Amino acid sequence: MGLFDKIKSAFTNTDKTETKPEVEQIEQKAPSETIEQPVSQPVEPERAEQKETEQYEKGLQKSRRSFTRRLNELLANFRYEDEEFFEELEDLLIESDVGFEATMYISETLRHESKVQNVRSMADAERVIVQTMVDLYGETNPDHHVFNDNPNGLTVVLFVGVNGVGKTTTIAKMAHQYIDQGKKVVMAAGDTFRAGAIEQLHVWGERVGAQVVSTKQGGDPAAVVYDGIAQAREHGADVLLIDTAGRLQNKKNLMNELEKMKRVISREIPDAPHETLLVLDATTGQNALNQAKIFKETTDVTGIVLTKMDGTAKGGIVIAIGKELNIPVKFVGLGETMNDLHVFDSEKFAIGLFKELIQQTT
Ligand SMILES: Nc1nc2c(ncn2[C@@H]2O[C@H](COP(=O)(O)OP(=O)(O)O)[C@@H](O)[C@H]2O)c(=O)[nH]1
Ligand SMILES: [Mg+2]
Image (cartoon, rainbow, N blue to C red):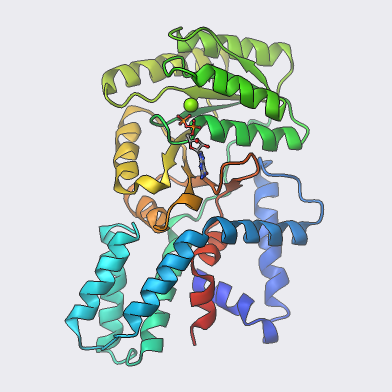
């Protein structure tokens, strides 16, 4: 069953008293069976699940409202033989950041369904478009729950990405989640380049209750990493989160700097860093994809954190990332506070983007 049918049947509830608990069990077991997740410990699992879904809905409301309104407007003029309709649909999808490949796939699917006569009415067209899109979310990111926590000691996470995408904020949010679980966190201020970056991490450290290791501005980031590992060991910390500077203007420098940091890390802890997370700002669309391509060439990225989803009306970027990059989105940022980082969940994400559209399909 595709993701669309799964969500749709959960919404139409009546005859499926068995389906829903089953779905929820799978959802909750997957993460805890593999490794511990940096999410707040659910006191009451079902309630926590529901709260998570609500937070996705809230965080994605800009995108949802915009897309729902525009699709409804477009569908009001639907004629199944009208080439102009398909072109307008393609424009809408491109403008929603789903990427070229997915746009063509969605419109070709609709063309095909129109040809084989499955689509005649506006309601038929709506169902095909929404179902195809939701199923794409289900297919593009199947492994969202796999986060490589180190079960045997210190987990080291390196954060990379260009200035302003949300690295430091994401580190603070993640520290907050780990601390919430009773873990000890050290943060290393490896962005020694940007004015104010070190101070910003100290402020967050105090707010969330994590220790911060830093040097002066302009200092050697690899030395900060070294000190960070030493401090984490000395204090018996569970997690070390490392901030970095992202100077894409000079790819060679960036590469050297990241390589040097990684060398220091793996010399101390052979299988670390356990995750190298690339932080991307969702509001920058195609630009974010281009950044990802450069970072992918430069360093081994193990996952993406997609920030500022709450600030964009173009929610399609997850599809474009899934189709074009082959790096899993592991977390999404849905706001500026420390509670606004979420483990990426394609089902909740699709509900956040398409709730009313899914409900209104017949
Ligand atoms: N709305 C929103 N703002 C965010 C999110 N993540 C980060 N920001 C904001 O983005 C700005 C830059 O973040 P910062 O962590 O300093 O980026 P860095 O340069 O990559 O370290 C700050 O104003 C953050 O509050 C998010 O998920 N949603
Ligand atoms: Mg920063």
